[in-house]
Length: 171
Image 1 (cartoon, rainbow, N blue to C red):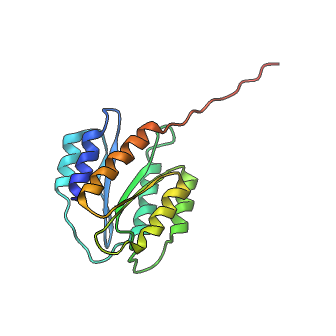
Image 2: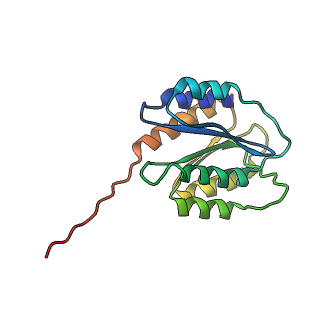
Image 3: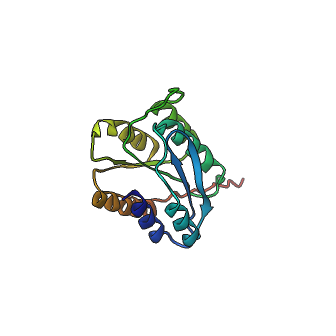
């Protein structure tokens, strides 16, 4: 279901959109570098496997934000996280507050999708991170809701934009 949701996002991408894909469990790994090539991105999604015992969510978010910084300041950036929200860090090196600070400093909104059929108790972290970084939280207890959340989130991201202007003063 999660792979299908990512494919839905890729299918909706415009030619000018670029996506990088990372996976996390016991470790964080870049699965696909920034690309607008839908065939490449879908092939990388197909190669994903569920490995690991732990879910190092906050560490993965920090690393994802740092990876987005590499894209530069001239492009609109956002991070999308699909997870059950349960941080099972072995080191507790990072907290939700660390993620919020890193994202805010980097001007990266974090969009979170709480995906679980089990315990939704951990969604509060995901909601807090999304709201405090300019993103949006979407609960998705099942596959249909996950697809709907992905589509809503993509439309929201397209409808959001920033206008920057520079004033010039003449004497």
